[in-house]
Image 1 (cartoon, helix red, strand yellow):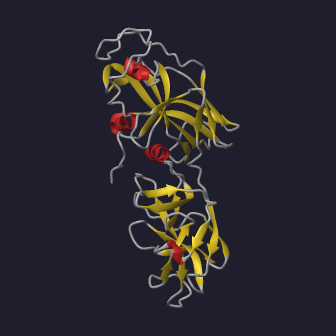
Image 2: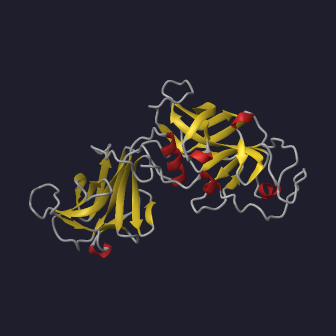
Image 3: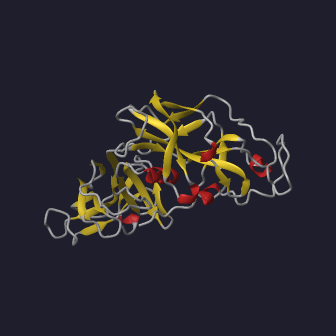
Length: 346
C-alpha cells in the first residue's frame, strides 16, 4: 500500500508565487523572476534552538534531508544535537552544493529541504538506529535557498536558511522566525487515556460505558475498558492493545494503530462479556458529534510516518478523537462525555 500524501510541492504551494510586487532585494531580477543576484545567507546565528513541549531524556534532534520528488521519506541527517533541559540546539551549517536541487518554480534557484525530527537516542551517539523510536515531529520544515527571487522575498523567504510552517489547507507555507522554533513531543507514546462524563439514565439499567477495539475496517471485536454508566463515571484505557492490527493505518506506511469506539453497552445476551449480538448505545462529547473514538497509534520508527504524523497533528499512543462527516478531530481528554439517548446513534 503506497503512502497517500500531498506532494511536498503541493505542501509548499509555491506555484502561485509569481505576480507579486517586488520587495527591496538588494539584487537584480529579470521580469520573469529569475535571480541574477548573488545570494547571501542572511539567517545569522550559530545554532538552531528548538524549544520542546517539555523535558525529555536520552533524546536527540536532527535535520533530516527530504527529497520532495520522492515523497515524505527523510534521508541522511545534516545536523544533530542532544537535548538538554527541553531545548535542542542544533549547529547551523551550510549544506553541501550537491545537496541542493533546482527549485521547481524557478530552476535558476537551488534549495534543499529538511525535517526536524526528535528521537530516542538510547546509545547517545547522535546517530538514529532503525529501532530507536521518534519522539517529536511538527509542521515546520527547514529550507535552505542559495538565493531567492522577488516573489519569494515578498513571501518572507530569504537566501540561506528559512523555517517554513506547512498548511493543512494547501496554502503557501508561512515563513516563521528562526529564533522562535518549536517542536511538539507528539510521538512520545501516551500509555493511557482517562475519560470522564455523565449518564443521564435515558439508556436504561445495566448499561456500561466501554471502549471497543476495531481495525477501522470491520466491526469492533474486543472490549478494552469497561465501567458502569451510573451518574458520573470515569474510565481509563491503558497499555498497547493486544493485538494491534498489522495493516497500514490511516495514511501511515509502516505504523499500525487501533480505533477504540467509546460507546455504551448492554449485555443483551447475558454472556457476561461483549459479543456481536449485544446492544451498542450512544456516547458523545457534550455539545459535539455523536461518535467518540479512543485512538491508539504504535510507537513510530518509520521516518516517513514520523514526518506525516507531524504534518497531520497525530500523536502516538492513546488520544481522544471525535468524528463527523469531516473526519476525525483530536480533542482534549478532559472533554466531558455524555451517555444518553440525546447523542443519537453510535
